[in-house]
Length: 372
Image (cartoon, rainbow, N blue to C red; front, side, top):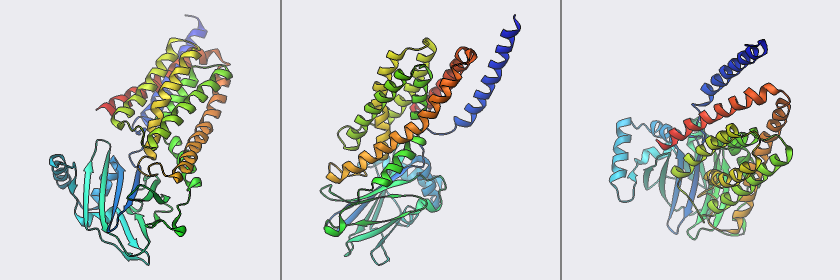
């Protein structure tokens, strides 16, 4: 065997070992962070209904914080499964481990009822309070006090007719928000544009599955024009379904969307291994699977921004702009690095296939994880 070939094989083995090491670090991470959540407050004549949805790990931490044992949680799940509503009564003392609600003036409020519903990937709490005489309440997400990995979440108050009254973004640095209960001139909801833009940027930067799919598409392209077409196709497609899902027009179950997103990563990598520069095939993949990824993006917006209220559209647009900004923030340096790497024949012959196999392995892992 020629010396050059031996050297190339040694480089390939070293590169593969590095990829496997990186894979071992990345694979335990969830593509959609299990520490995400959102809060929606509905205002009625005599009561307030607060619905808080938490990702799997955050919900588990909140139940532990509430002093519930695994046996008690199992009992709740069994009661919820037998219930016609799919929920079970939650001890009122557990509400404090989830949310801290007070009327204007700092008067603490105690829920009159609390319920919990368990899903495959998330848990939903429903807390019911008597409506106070004040026109606003302060809501603090207690989860930020004991869950270090908790991600920023949107919170919105709306009337019984779905009209948005106020909205905000909660985070570890700002866990409390003032929510309006009345629709008057002093309670017009702020657009929350800057907050929603930042939330969009953070959502895409933490959405490793979206980034890996986009990276897999770009990995198989060499020329700038096809790269721009792929980026544009992906952007237009996921913007469409993001809007449709957030508006409530179409809301596919996450149990369907999440495996499809993982599958898109695998198929994009398979396409890389089949041809050198099949740009046309990547256009339809970017557009077709971009529609699926848009539903994944919408998970950060559903149930928080109202239902068709005119104030809904500014946050929606700003969130989408944040997603695009974060996408470009990642895509531009990746494109630059790939263009430089492709100048070396060793990368085209060994590096590109190895990267495709590595990303495909991650996609297969996520696919199995999400199906089971």
